[in-house]
Amino acid sequence: MRRKNLEEKDINVIEDILKECKVCRISLCCDGVPYIVPMNFGYEIKENNLTLYFHSALEGRKTDGIKKGETVCFEMDCGHKLIAAEKASGYTYAYKSIIGWGNPQVISDTDEKIDALNKLMYAQTGRYFDMSGEKAVVDKTLVFKIETNNFTCKVKKGLV
Image (spheres, rainbow, N blue to C red):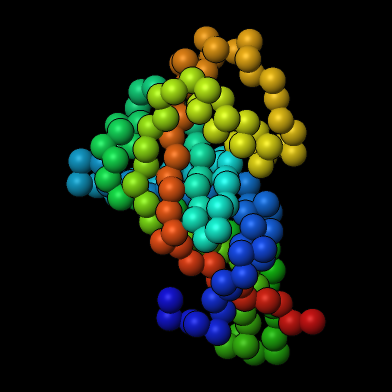
């Protein structure tokens, strides 16, 4: 990270950013062409390891890229605020962001898929759901995760 003065390493602050962000962009390479897709996500933090959970259709360009298991880049951001100044050169922008890399892993075990989907639903809605009666839907859903400790967090605060 070039701007070390903006780097955030406090895992509690990082988790607050994960809670605030609702969309994570995943960058894949599909047939030699960059492809970026915004996705809702769930997460789990254990020590300094981050696991992101996603769901998708069983077919498609994104799914083909995910199934390759090649390294992807992910990005999420929130807390946007334009900070005005007298001169154009003084304008800046406040934000919080997390960027990282990892290899997507398709989850095939039904119980693990349900657990991952519940983490996703909790991150998006603040609620857990009983999905025990939804096995047919779960079976028709691609669920994958990215486990990584290779990520950075940046916070640029607004003027107080």
